[in-house]
Image (cartoon, rainbow, N blue to C red; front, side, top):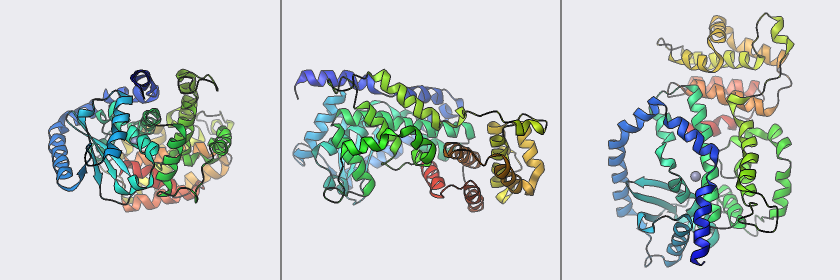
Length: 412
Ligand SMILES: [Zn+2]
């Protein structure tokens, strides 16, 4: 590529970051507890990342022009595309058959690890997508908000956990866009598929992009019917694929087809994100709840009783932290009502589901379950007993148990 192409891509990569990612990251960084956590862990972080770096130097092969001209060429292409100084990028080959890559910071340095199993199964353009994706996390400064560490270490409350999870999904959209700019749409989709199938490719798995697009065309119906899939951290996440597919249609990348601007694409993605956002559930007014002399939506009442049931699995903590996290989601009155129900909470939840929630769609079930998980996880852990009760709620809603695992995978 000539320098003019790189200048154009540099500009595009700065504009490509998904606005929802920027907005949520800024909101989360303003929260005092999160800010304090980041300040307090700075020193420890430096020590542990120095340690990690030293370990890499001892045990993993560092990629240079001499050790692997092939991979080095990919790294240079990606760094140039994103306008990152390649002097700050150090890439290591990690001896593992797992199809995986990661990115970390060590001061100014951007460290990237590529597992040998990953390198084996990708061609050059696919490798560029993966390197570009990882560099994208660094380029958009996602490391400034260490979501995983925050969830592990501090009690930030259930509504903020939901926000962190939502941000984490949206940050992947930005990183995928960076990856695409370093590669092309065919290689992007095929590497996402290889990442999710453990490296299978032709002739076992055949990717026909037109077929794939047909599959994604029904996205609205698809979200309502299969929305649990949208929450998966799995690379073959329909939400991610849909998002990167739309982005590949912008006119800067594709001068003849659809003439979409980045803004057009962002608006489409906003709509999908909105459907997954638990705080924005659209509730139809039901007369049923008013009959009982209150204005609670049955889904809120269900959330309250079900969450209480999960929290009470091993006794409610005396400090009231667990109930506070429930209050944050459903309010004080419903929390009190659930507390009064005590050991009848699960029965009450089941009754509400059977009588008033028989027709709720899968999207709402997912959001409800995500809320209940966030409430139970707000104190920093989910015990074995709580996990069992969560499983019962999952069954009650007719959801697959793997949904819980997908959400918890992010938190643990
Ligand atoms: Zn990522």
